Length: 180
View (cartoon, rainbow, N blue to C red):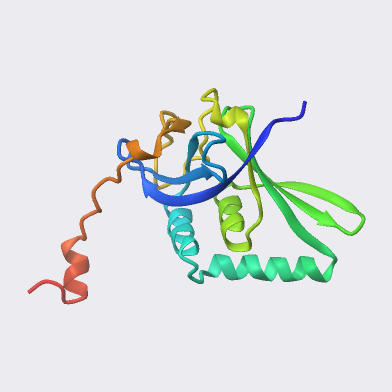
């Protein structure tokens, strides 16, 4: 069964106001096409993705560029990234590679897929099944954050508000002479 796909882009990274979990905000390229999607990612992925969205170099981004060069040498290129529902109801990502004599696909982590889409400009195609509210789009929970299945699948961007910044511990401030 072929899934209906919508081309989207990573708009921003934020902290979910209710759960405190890092999420990527994914919006359709054509605003009239569909609602947006929140995708849970680890804090580490959120940090890298935030820098990549600002066109800043990251070690991960440099790895992506090396991958792209290696693929180019072998007459290949990343063709598309697909976010689709997994049997568990969570999102999973697939990377499609175009070769001179065909194509191949491999499953990759959702946070990694979003980084590839931002850094290399690979089209990000999201299944309508993730957008219709029947699936919760979320990456597997990292060790530093609990899995929260209540992240809403469709949402309205104007309703999302960032939570407060985490306070800086006094021990850290003292280490850098930020306290008297």
